Amino acid sequence: RCTIRPTARTTVLGGRRSSASFGADAGGDWRAFHVARAELDSILLDHARALGVKAHIHRSHVTPIVSGKRIEGVEIDGQPLRCSFVIDASGQVGWLTRSMGLKYLAVSPQLTAFFGYCEGQLPEEQLFEAGGAGWEWMAQVSPGIVNWTSLCFGTHKRLPPPVAMSSLPTCNQSGGADVTWRIAPSVAGPGYFIVGDAAFVTDPASGNGVLRAVMSGIKAAHNAHAVLAGHAPPVAAAQDYQTWIRRWFEVDTARLGSLYDSLRSDWRAASDVVTIQRPVFGLQRISGQLRRSSRFKVGDCYVQNADFEYPQ
Image (cartoon, one colour):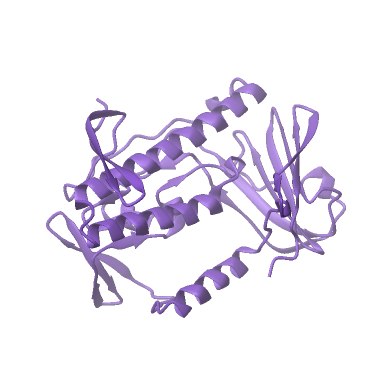
């Protein structure tokens, strides 16, 4: 269902152009997948239904069912649905975090990315260009449609298409999104996991948003299964997931920060960083340092059992 399968990405950093292939093996070149969000949603939903998942879609009001320190299910339009684990994949809406009255921890200035679509073709099927003002990303998403995404440091008003696409007619929707780097104060706890952009957000230059969404969902399911099968204590499974998510966030933000520092030393001066609220419901906390830790094996992976506390 994907008609565009690039084998390489072209990058222009500070005027220097390079091209890097995705790799190859005995079966041939590795190729990327370019697929529209609505199409990917349809593919995943169809597969879930084929596996027996019952979907409740387009519900107007969803709230968590909380008993003491545990999330025990959700209430959808007044109908309670109890379960062993709630997995929040609500994206930047951050449904569970906001339902618990928490705020995300931001670690960058305010960043806004804008996107749109044009009719035409690119010489390169993937092009990322960055400089002192910010960056532009262009990708051929179908034989006649190009997607563009742009971020300019300190700019939060709608941006026009990149100059390379200025002669192409626009089509489909355009818009913007807050892509300030931020992480939920608690991404796992009694009865819940938070995955994808609901767990943390970095701007699209990190290049792994879809991969993170899929892998964090797999990781949450793996840890939930370990608890239900009796292979891991609930607290250990939650803390392992906390550690895994936080490390990914730290690596992504460190790499992006290093890239942006090389492009413009004062890019962080755009706005202030927000503060964090303490978790409620006694949920597990994320912290800057590990206090105590121990490891034990669950199946084919190691679970990190650790205590976290907030930096003062």
